[in-house]
Length: 182
Image (cartoon, rainbow, N blue to C red; front, side, top):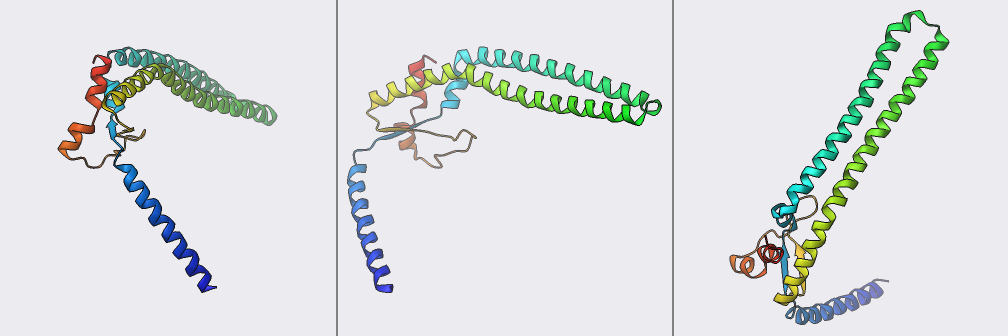
């Protein structure tokens, strides 16, 4: 049993070594650039209009939600005022009705958040397409094999260190902005 594990391990090491040698020679031809698309997008003139449209949409949705919330609070208040003088059966029905209204209000809030995210995606998508086109053009012009995003979607930095020479040579953020006329 141990002889078999040893043989399999040795075989795996040989394969990994061979793949490592092959990939090392293939890496000599790789040219990898990186870009900060968020930085590019923030400097795009169209971004101000997108932000304003999104803010208007958010304000409209907040106003609608506030109205629904105020209506619900009014109904709860009315119930509390008449609670002492109505029958137990009427209380139970009214509590069920208010419970359903509360659930609907929470559902509406969740739906509104999803609609806001969808609207943001809808408004930002054309800008991202422009950035993608510019990245492709710059990468082709510079002969890059890959271009990676400098940050994750959560804002975490992927490129932890790059020498000044590497930044000058492989950070294509400014070239992408130039390509977009920013």
